[in-house]
Image (cartoon, rainbow, N blue to C red; front, side, top):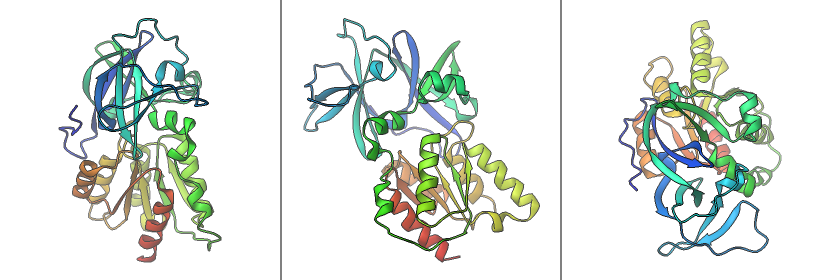
Length: 301
């Protein structure tokens, strides 16, 4: 499958791959998808996580297969001959997700994606990042990073790298963080605090971050209140590429350093981020490298 999205960077759009499990409709950002292949029997791994079905080896690569029906607590159907594997690549990790039906790709705006309320998040155990209505159907966009990090925590953020930094001086430079995952937002904030960066401003999507930046700009305090911006790419309402474009296209704001810290960093995404003016682009889970880049950018100020 060609996952080079034909969408200009910064337009706040994405393509969603729609699939079914248990009669319900779910979605994944096409940027995460490497290919889609028919279901094939897997080799079980003893003592593995309950949601791991096993491994299989397309071509020359061993890939772990995760059962989304198990993750979602939906009974799997007896006849899986028509099922599919969605093979993904994010956080520098290949994984296959076992689904029932793949229905197609939809181009949507992040502005049309609804942030799920606490009732929905609780029901889905916090793995619904957004909901979009397409052709009368509600499609729940799943937090695949969280699914994988709950199976293997170090794939989310390598927080152990922060401990290796040792004791560091306290730094009051204000850092704005745009990250929609409550889990990752808290982990990033805690990691930065442990690394000495104790003045953080959390925003749960790019729109909230942009509104905050504009508020400070109107007050004339933006350069006092924001020394650096860290942004994810995938976020409802406004994504990180759009946020980066807005900051870097503004003559009054463009000197504020922007770090894109995302599970989607690959060569194509790096090219897009560079065109938008991002100062640094790093892949989750490299939180240690993130702190190193923050050190360099803050020292320049």
